Structures are given as structure tokens and as C-alpha cells.
Amino acid sequence: MIGSRIRELRREKMWQQRDLANALQMGVGAISNWETGRAKPSKNAIKEMAKLFNVPVEYLTEDGTKKAKDGSTELAALLKVAENEINQLKDEKEKLIIEVADKNLKLKGYVDSYKELKDENVNLKNEITFLKGEPAAVREDVDGMKMKINELIEENARLKETIVHLAMKGVFNG
Image 1 (cartoon, rainbow, N blue to C red):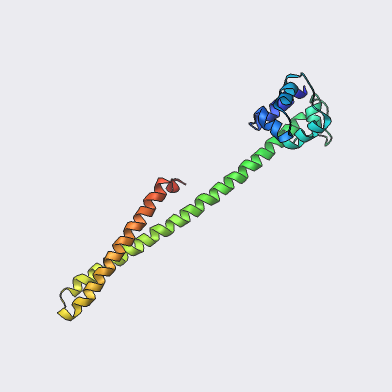
Image 2 (tube, one colour):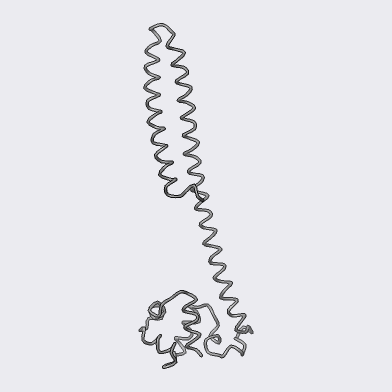
């Protein structure tokens, strides 16, 4: 009876016998012997497994028809294990949602910066077009603006590369 419970709980955690043996600081052979009924674990090992699997000691040692110390039956003990795992999954989901939201905010900042630079680029081009009709004294301002436009074009290219890089990492899919 205890061997099948150990195997059941170990598999629910998706552990190999080696994982349980490491957690209990024992050999794999001991776990195998317990699960096959060739040997029984010590009281201390049972207590440690109950802690690891988050179940009452009685769940491991009794046939499931008797009540555990806290008054719960086997089904209630299993429900408690399921509830704990669901809570862990909820926590992980919440962390993932926050991570995706952070990435989306960062990406939005890149996109907004790109749009601002693009608008500034259009404004400078319009000013240059206007100034081309002005006298030669204004030509120096036009040359300065051309340099500014070239800088903005380079910045646009860097932002495009960043956006493409983030899109390839799947940030847009969040």
C-alpha cells in the first residue's frame, strides 16, 4: 500500500526515483524497494516524504479509508495537494503576465520613439524644402539640418533593428 502511494505521489511531481532519493538523501535502490513492496521506509523517511509531497503522514501509511490527523479523508488530502499545485500554477501565470506586460510597455516605448523620430524627420525635410528657396546665407542652416536628418535616419534604422529583434523574440505575441 505505502509503495503505491509513494510511486503515485512521486509521479504526480513528475519525479524520477532518483529525484526522490536525492531529496531524501538515500539510494535509488531504497525507493525502488519501497515502491515494489520489498521493503518499507522508516518512520523518519515517511515523515520526510509527507513534507515533500505536502500530504499527511497517514495518507502514506493508511489504506485511505481511515481519517488523517486533520480529520480529512484520502480524497480531501488529494484535493489539498491539487489545490497547492493550482496555486503554484496561478503564481507562475501571474509572473508570466507581468513579464509580458513589461516587455510590451518597453516595446511600446521603442515604437513611440520611432514614430516621434519619423515625424521629426518629416518636419526637417519640409523645412529644408522651404529653405532651399532662401538666399545663400541660409544655406549653412540647410546643411546643418541635413546632418540632423542623417542622424535621425541612423537612429530610425537602429530603432527598426531593435523592433525587429524584439519581434523575432516573440514579444509581440504576448
